[in-house]
Each structure stands twice: as structure tokens, then as C-alpha cells.
Length: 125
Image (cartoon, rainbow, N blue to C red; front, side, top):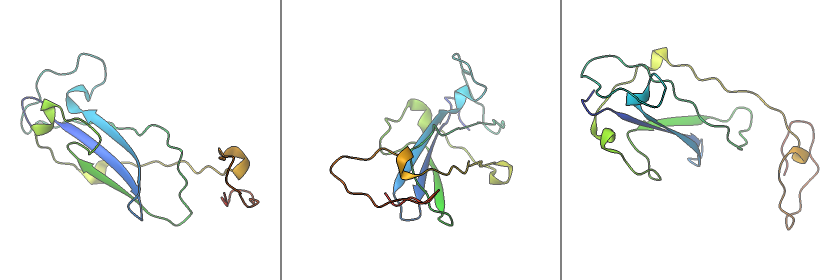
């Protein structure tokens, strides 16, 4: 909690540590809109709803993902609001992932690469 806000940066990685995507939130805008809240006061609960934009990634059935939350990320210029601290109640968090089956015909293929034939929902390209 801080008077000048707080900043959250979520990064999703696959089980090998490869970065799949990220989400960023300035908690002064936790309620939405363009004006935000001027101050966030210490020990006052704020519920921030963060959403990842769609990512073109493939995760095999049974693979793990890791979500890492920090105040700012390596590819993001920190704002003045990233100096405030916060805590997270993970028991109240919800992660929803759609299951989408695609064949190689649905994916972009670079012309100079040879690809094996695919079976329904299994990526071989």
C-alpha cells in the first residue's frame, strides 16, 4: 500500500522458463476508467482484475505454467507507482484457461521450414 499507488507486473512462463507473455496494471486504475484514483492508502484493500491479452503459444497437455508477480518487468519502464508495496491473497484468485484444439493448418508456417503432418489437436509443426 502506498500513497502514490502500486504497480503489478505478471509474467507467464512455461515449465522450461520461456516467457510466454505478460500483463501490467497500475492499481490506481483498479476500478477501470481513465481517471483512476489519486491515492491508494496503506492497509486499504484494493481488488485488481488483471487479464492477459490473447497469446499465440502452445502448451502441451500436462505441461505446467508459472505466473510470476513483481512490481515491474524487464521489458517495461517502471512508473513512479512501482515503488509502493502490496500483498496478494492467492486464495481469492481465479485463473481461467481455454482449451483450444488446432491443427498445423491453423498456425502460421514459415516458408523455409518443413513440417510433419499433424493429427487433430496435436501440434507437430
